[in-house]
Length: 164
Image (cartoon, rainbow, N blue to C red; front, side, top):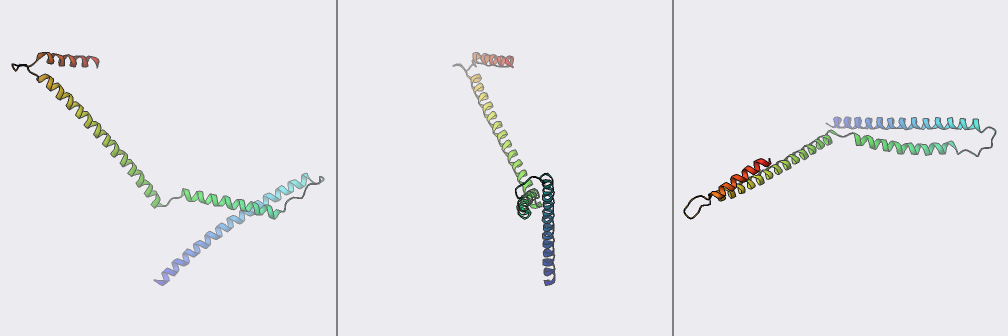
């Protein structure tokens, strides 16, 4: 058991060393590129300013240091971007779950709205039916149905059908 733990620790340490070496190599290449660019610019300037008295150029070391600082800042920004783009499987699953939950909630809200609208329509329909029934069932003293109301309801139905 102890050997396995030590082996695992050694593997992790090796991986970290490799990463550090890789990062150092990348930084070294960047520095070499910067030196090359600076030397190239210096050569060009020397060609154009051979006879003209030019002010002293800043030392190459200072320029390289400034550029390396700038490149380190850029590398940090690039690493942050890479970290943002790469997501672990747990985070991906979590995002998918949240999306599904949001969709589920939307569906539930829509179903509630539909149900409420249905109930309101049903209540409205029942009220109109009740009112119509009361009007049609009205009777006079002798117990006969009032025909005027029946004719009015039939007229209302015909007018409604003509509008549609």
